[in-house]
Length: 269
Image 1 (tube, rainbow, N blue to C red):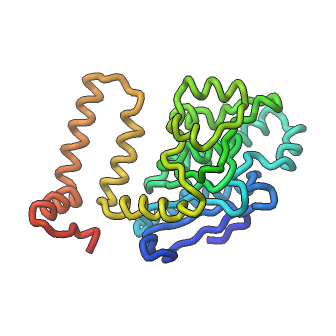
Image 2 (spheres, rainbow, N blue to C red):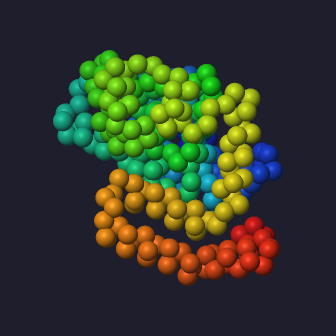
Image 3 (cartoon, rainbow, N blue to C red):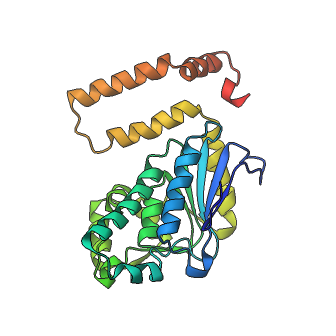
């Protein structure tokens, strides 16, 4: 895999925990605060699609180089949009939507390592991830209305992550808010010092890698399928079927046997 705007590493053995089972996708345009253009969007989509299909990979870390995590859309790219036709705007927005979909629906758990400020579309990137760890000095902003736009394409992910009430406020005001506020709203799961970022991500990866790979993928899909659904007969039936299939699966049977026999399951051997 070759990329112009990203650094994609697989395998990696930086700390003895994140071995060949972990891939890292690093935004690598620090000179423009990792703002994305059409090339970055296409490469992120391709990276998550390709890495998600590799059986040996069990988790993906989304990181960034430089002082900022992601400033949203690149200014030069935005200038080129000024003369877009409605059809071109729809096609362009569709590519952004495809990128977010690739992250959110990636079968591997995705951990965002947010070392710096995260604005606009960059916040959409984070919201599409499963777990978010942020440095305490990082700030977040949904800045679109300041330039006459709305955060439409990222809105399904952001609203799921931070809730309707908070999204209404920050969509409308474009206020900058802290990592601590993002944590309180549920957008960020852990807020740590910059020095503790890697240690915290590694601890989360260790937890993910200790679990059944198939169960982790199924659990990720379970949350996606159940969240926001009415507590209906159909939903209950679907969850009954889900646990039945899980118990009958190869890793389900192996995990229960290993637990009862007080030994490590096969995926840890």
